[in-house]
Length: 294
Image 1 (tube, rainbow, N blue to C red):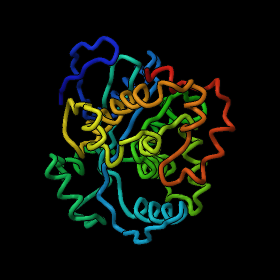
Image 2 (cartoon, rainbow, N blue to C red):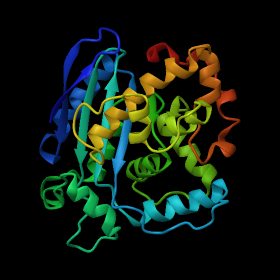
Image 3 (spheres, rainbow, N blue to C red):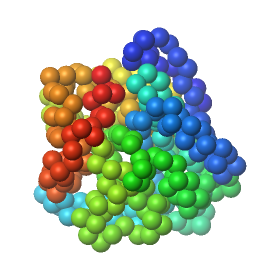
């Protein structure tokens, strides 16, 4: 899958390739990921595709705990289908799309029929995923040793309304159901991904005129989806990164990097009331966020 983008520095047309990852090339592609991370691709964005929401949430005035109970119920009950990963070095993007075998429609795995049909309409081949896809346990082993996560990682992570994406990642990395307590879940997110994580949906609270989902925000900011389509994880991860690159200088150019870090790092939309003390406890000189974004 290929497409084109304007490099944010050179503004030249360059080709973007979404690298499709299956069981057969999983080790090879993780070797490439580690290589690019060592070459300075230290900002990562990601997106997950999953079989929809199974359990609804009807309390409009929900607390962060209510939201987490809802998130945990759905993540525990369903299996990931795709993961998109984009790495960025300040100039160029490298994009991967991991296809998992965990979800089996014919086996009767829990799913939302509307969501599954939407994924089919956007080109996802569920039978191929079952046959040729990645086992999440194999992915977990390679991710844990890749240098992208854990105590040795110096990555910055970008997502859009990404609490549920982190939910699937934590489920995969631990190979266990999510913790019962919200605090324990957040501690696992920070353990694996650090606090240098940014949720664009939360950042939009401070962006006058921005609201809605990723596609709407990208359209308003005139950010092109240069490859793939919505609900393809690789394409969505790239669009998330490009939207982040557009938002930071447009809305936060007046702030110093330390201020940006203290305002937004470690905060996930919907859980920010619980997390608000965390950013202030991390040294500002560890911030890489604003340096790469402008």
